[in-house]
Image 1: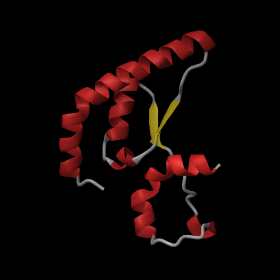
Image 2 (image 1 turned 180 degrees about the vertical axis):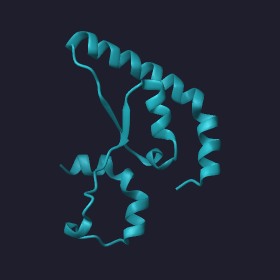
Image 3 (image 1 turned 135 degrees about the horizontal axis):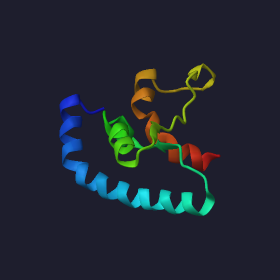
Image 4 (image 1 turned 90 degrees about the vertical axis):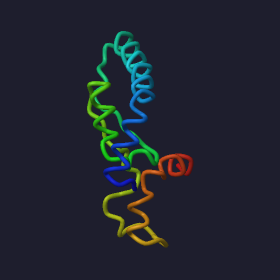
Length: 104
């Protein structure tokens, strides 16, 4: 996980790229909303960047919607056959969205 200083530097450097991505996403959201009459209420982020402090807030600000990390690992891990430590799982759980999706 990036430190707060590293996160701030990363967000500052990546802000223009994130802004451009969010503009494209907003266009897609608008198209969907116009054609279906439904409003997109939540956006779920997955992957390693979810661990960057402030990234959810940045997306939320640009897209004007609720943004949360996609939780693919159950909060109660007692039912999982975990062969790695809890700390290691906590550090990598957001990287598991694609493998878990493929396994289903």
